Image (cartoon, rainbow, N blue to C red):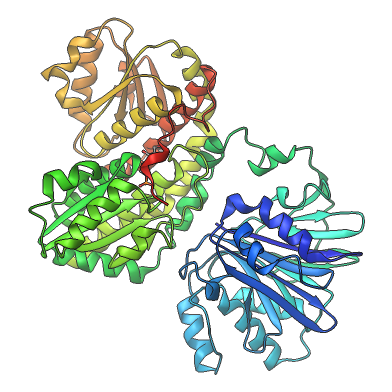
Length: 610
Ligand code: F6R
């Protein structure tokens, strides 16, 4: 996730406006920044890695001439956060500059083709191909308008994009296009804007035009024209008045970042499915060759590792050891060796315990692999190979979208590994790959159909003093995660364990009305035994709250309350959709109890090193 912005002013310099707007988009990404303007037949550009304020202090981003320009604040997905990878990106001639938010899936093929045609690439980004494609179109057909050259270029792109293009070809225009990445126009009295999000221009105008997928926009000082990319038909759309405060706008109208990020999951999961095959291949090759594999992480990332260990075992027949990073050095510090492989998982890539475990393993010559949301973090620097999970910055304190993205990446890895090892049939492979592809829609459906019900559930159970979270198999990890969220955000003491352990002690806590949340995947081997566990809790008077599949009549009949997820989810993928109701429950419980879900009480700032 990055922030793009562009503006055309009838009066004054664009650069200070772009700079201020990028600051308001900084929550979308902040590892590099860049601005380009056009003035008197010349493109001016400043860009560098680092936070906007730091780059501005050195470069003075306001000091660019011209009343038209574009800008970008980046969250790296392709290419490390270095100056050379900062946007805007240019074509060979420097006559075309582009800012982009999204992921171009087929950029390697396009890059190869363009390089064979003589184009020179300077960055490692996917974005740069767009500038060269536009250049190529204009070279081949100089009669084309800038809008047509952009249209032809974006028709070749696979993946997600919101772009803004500035060119000497038509120096009074900005051309934008959108597919699966947000883009919105702002219409001022004497100015016009394009941006990833409304807060970028809300201080100047509250008149906004939302752009849909498959649309191209031509901005000029006269206004805007929207066209369909497919057939260039013109679309008429009037601006709407946005009555958000700037604070609401940053959260896209949501009251808190946590709920905004929960709702972002269909989109983040789609992005995660755009992983670069190459890195998945490399990591699965390392895992295949390893004589022992440790999955090392803290908190929510550890829960993702725990679930992943079931995926690797069930799909690829690879035993792995999920270990809390804080325990790793003590437990394995002496035994880890040159034949060990560590897959370290960290959203931030900076968690001190995870880095300590990595450091210890590195000193003992183990192979370090990384999965992180933060390209350029310490974890990416110390990993032999790393993979970026592409969830966009996590502003809410509770990990939500990053958990499901981590699970999705590890499911893709497990499938790759399974194929490599010939462990599952092609039919099963295709079935699981297809189910993984449809998870974004499944998650969308859960949010759409169950959120209201979960709100009511939170109100019903708001005075409960303690909860149990129980699952079996892979959903033991989901139970642990549900419990962590409820404790962290709503401050409700909670206990989680594999449901089969109930009879070995914990059941003695149960008394009438004690709320027990069961995670009940239907497909797979745990359903029957879990029903036995529900019955033993019910017999002691527990209030049974089930997260279950639609139409699971057996579980429904035993439940006091239930939340339904769509049918037909393979158990090995089930933690992804089943985590959603648990995140929503923690959020609404926090609200019921009068807490701010974005501001946990004892925020453990000391756990990350920057
Ligand atoms: C829980 C949460 C934490 C983190 C943990 C690891 O909502 O956010 O438990 O998951 O501190 O952080 P990363 O993944 O950045 O290493």
